[in-house]
Length: 636
Image (tube, rainbow, N blue to C red; front, side, top):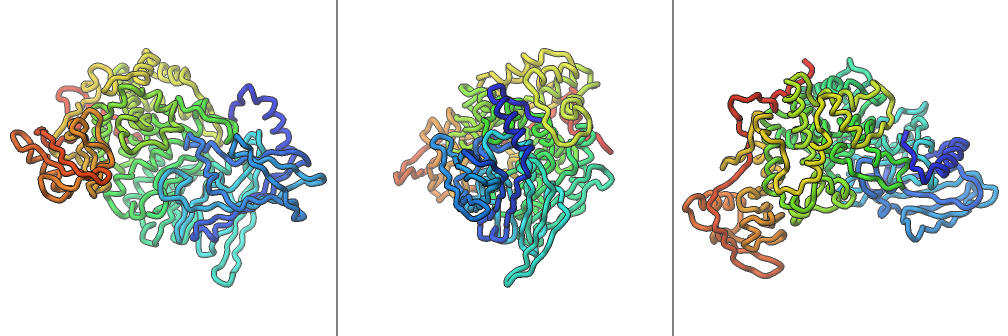
């Protein structure tokens, strides 16, 4: 259960008693207009006469921000069972709250809501979620509930209507009845689900679509695991036996690592579409994974997005079951505190990437190449570290999630993902070194995330002190000082323990040849990553995406948003920019750019002769290769 905040104990206790005395809310959602980007919902809410406030979910778990998509709520109408309208008035301060007066003698209200799924294919769950043949339903977008209620105490009986030629996947358990009716144009199917708490409902999205496929994984393991796929075409949900084996291996590896499971069953809900937003959002018994249409049939795309499912799956343990106290709020209106997101997301990034290698989605060399790219930009292309420490990127997360873009290197973003990964890698290396290889971060994960053994979904909050105690239980060390140094540092380079090269068996160096991950990133993004040479990140159209503050490009006058028209007198092309950097190496000529900036043109010369620079991990001789040891599977 969620811990209650002291200022609200009386209110929540009274609200809980009220909720338990009432029949469940019924919530019926209709997806038949999802291809036209509109969802319909009808809610029946038990009430008592008098003043009442309803609220729309504001703080969405996993998004760590007040990102409830209320701007796309429409057709919000409240009536009595007899059809009498009940006027609502929005709170003048809290835009997510509606004040109403329930008429005398009224014990329930009918609420109709439409959700306009018209957002662009960017952002998180508020982004595009439908196409002509599929839809991802996030229940928080179509529900309201009484203010002050604990989400675990509000019970809901949900149902779903969807096109008859569609199928769906969800962690919700089906009820006793379902039906299919034929209409003039298309048949309509309905499904009823068992009554659950509002907390569990919002934590259990539904993926539905015409081209839908469900694959059982590791069928000998209980609880059961399913890979649910919906694509824009039948070819998108084809999956090779090799990939199925890798996801089956992922299920086995998580059992060995976390030594527990905290769900009744688990569903990977994978949306394969170029029409929806691309991201991952964790849930306790499922994950909302949205990727490009051809991800499972394009080998390069599969590897590029390979970390997504292991990352979101890891959140079932780290984030949903074990959760920072500041994020374990009792409902969706109380603000979340993100100060421990370097654990929630950083540790998940680390363990998720390690699992990606252990289950075979990534070869060890791919893992190292990606990590080298991450380490390089945090050490040599992130000047924002000199003023914003890692801790502030977590504390300020609710704002930084919507930042990024131009001068991202100087502003910083949600760096607790990538820098958090380096922090936890280093912690793992320290544990291995100090224990002589007898202990690892696997031991911490098994004890901390597997705390209590197998359980039903629930929340076990933790604090900074709990993290320190958990690490000390594995290997005694000044873990508090270790963590605070890395969280509070304003060094230009990410802080590391002395002798980190000897701890890992690898050192970060640069080469004029791109590593595999650099090549993959440039080909998938259709750009050139010249951050470590010129200090520029440039798209295929010549548009400057970012300029590293303090770099030679920055000092010469480049800025984000500028458009490179020509290089050395020739019209811009990515291969020409590569060639120009190579040609300037050593005693070659300076690189001359013609640049357009808001309709004005100028020439910028970069007197740079260092050639192309790409990060890589170079093997350190005569020391243990602990980084390789970390990637070894725990199961056979």
